[in-house]
Amino acid sequence: MNSEHEAITCGIGPLGYIAGAIQVEAVGRAMHPELIKAEIRMKGSSPAVIATELGISKATVSHVIYGRGVSARVANRIAEITGLSVGVLWPSKKTVLRRAGRPATSAAA
Image 1 (cartoon, rainbow, N blue to C red):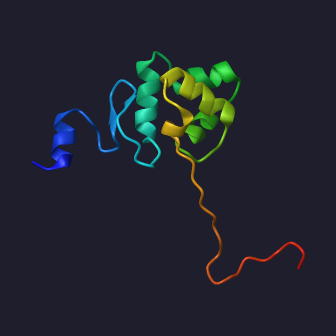
Image 2 (image 1 turned 90 degrees about the vertical axis):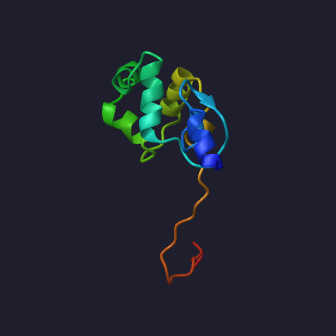
């Protein structure tokens, strides 16, 4: 029996989470957006309710959930509702993007 099979039979998903907001292991990847939305709904709320509470658009909440936008206020509210830390929901990314074939230039050039 392999560890993947054992994990599935124990109710642990491929990202290392168990339903009910218990983190089993840190895998270095953001929690899947559908799992985040499911956690919000299991706690009796919804992305639309969060948007109304914070006075922002539903699209803004969606962008944060899907990792396309950054808002500490939205992320903290989602973390508060789900009982998960922001670091579990969206682990920090330290990626620097540069165009291929072009060296980094300094501002003093």
